[in-house]
Length: 430
Image (cartoon, rainbow, N blue to C red; front, side, top):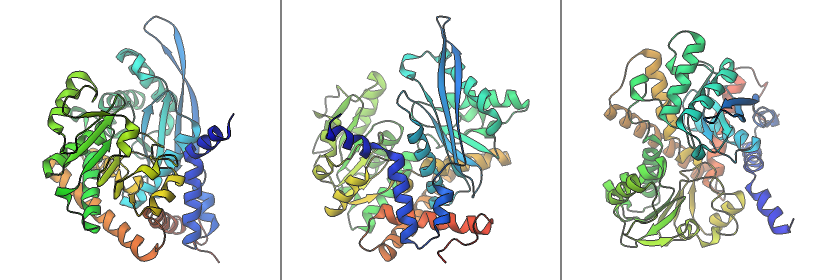
């Protein structure tokens, strides 16, 4: 294996990068190493076999995972993804990010993440339903409204959440729809949940632009990923008058320096399934999108998109991480040296878990807020979180970056809670 391939694999290891960031934040904050000992490993990590009878009658055994990282603030919370390339390290890292995210935005959840290693694009709806229900049957004992609450993630949606809620309710023999969030409205879902992460990205971008003196209505926006997060964020930027000059999805991207018609792109994607083929711009690749001349770059696809080999090409003044882990540590250093502000994922994409919290509260109390109330409370939460973290970064993290500031701020909250609960004798160094 070549040196370049080895280097790339090392750079792509999200778990190693996350652990290094946690350790660095703890050391910079003069916190006890005991804090790191609590945060370096999930409290529980489960790997299970999921047998499914496929449509052709054959039995196929899938591998499922659930990582429950830390529940000092409350029940575990985190999405379930269906993807062929999931790894134990990536699932553990994602659960850690969720712990940090919940602490940062101030919702009473701990971090978790789940996955099934599969290719959902090759499966029928019936096969996915069987697989989902089997996942719940083998893991049902560690799930629950007061224990661990899954949500949608890559290749899972409201329908998958409905299957989970139904199967869990069958096991418990009582309706228990609060076991998941991101459900359809008919079974206890929350209005605004589907758009919440993208809406949160919009609010965070607005606050970052204001903090740096950038007029949002003149900011040229480029968005990698035109799914639930990127697509909804693009619509909100279009509504606000911000020119969205480039968007992309797995099929490729399009670029128009004068601004794209986002409404037409949405219609095109609804008809064809992909951004590719839209006639209102120049065809570009996903890599080319990252280097587009723009003011705000929003990577809202998958992990490890901005790396050491392309970070120097980024021309944006601000990077808003709509996806989880889109920037590697090596790329972070390059962006910082180029005076590019990176608003980290644990802050930028926390709108989803925030509205998941709203949904959970409504399920517990048996009532429903209207859309205006949900969006207003989301805006309040996101705005408050940005201002607190940005102020902390400016005052306490001179010479560092905003990711380090966000990690320090989040971990200090976690350390305080762990000390009060008696998990630590002291959260600070003696």
